[in-house]
Length: 152
Image 1: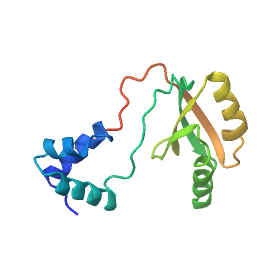
Image 2: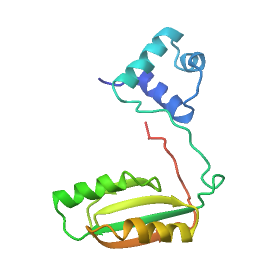
Image 3: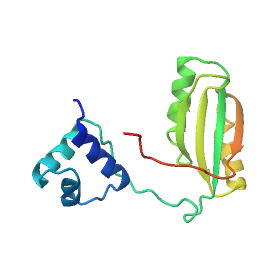
C-alpha cells in the first residue's frame, strides 16, 4: 500500500493526538467523516498504525532514573542472541532494546525509581545472565529531546 498526502496528514495528526476526534481529522484533511474513517481503518489494518498508547510523565509515577546500557554477549551465537532477547522481553524496566553493530551487541534503555533500584536490577537480573560478558551503564543526567513522532 502506498501512502498519499491525505494518509500522511492523518498520520501526522494521530501522532500528535491519538484521541483526535474523527470530525476534526476529516476537517483538517478536507474529507468527509466516512472516507476519513475508512482511511484510518485501512492504516490500522495495513500495520501503519500499530497501537494507540498513553504517554506518561515517568517522574510523576516515581520512575525518575533513566539508564542506557551497552551489553556485550560472551559469544555472538544465534542461540545467545535469541535467549538474551527472550529474557529481556520479560523485564518491564527495559523500555527499549536494540541489537546494534559496533563495540557492543545490545543497547538498552531502562527506567527505574533510583540508583538503588537500578543496582538491584543490574545485580539480580542483568549481570547474572550467563550469556552476558560485559555491561556498561550510562546514567542519563537530562533528556533534551524525547519523542514518539516520526518525521513524516
